Image (cartoon, rainbow, N blue to C red):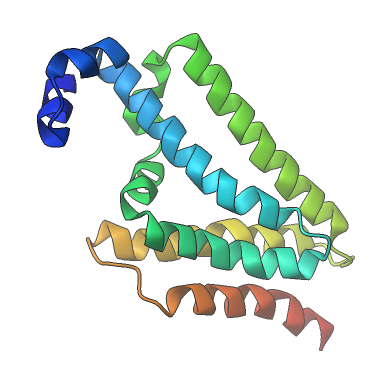
Length: 168
């Protein structure tokens, strides 16, 4: 696989093998790069002071990032398990666990900051910020289609509606 990557990017295969000794190392690096890019955009938004804004913009940000980075989004949709996560070296697994913990902490804090005593408030936050954007991204990219311009607006409006309806 590294030789195929070298050919695709026009690099000498030795340079790819030097950086990635095998397929597993290459897949771990691919995953880490995609996840880091996504988290660099999403985590600051989830940490906004106003929870309702963080929820709306969290949904929007996921769609905007995936639209700008469809290949990386496809990597994340594939999932670490399908990229031979169980064969990754210890450092790659530690890095992934750290990234997962950062996202979990941001979502937990966001849920705690939502001023909504309803028993389904946490589920609505996760639906708005995780499930809805994931489903929209998957629908387009799994079909080989570009995510349309309107998708981020739609995700943001849907996320807001999950909380606006509770207040009426």
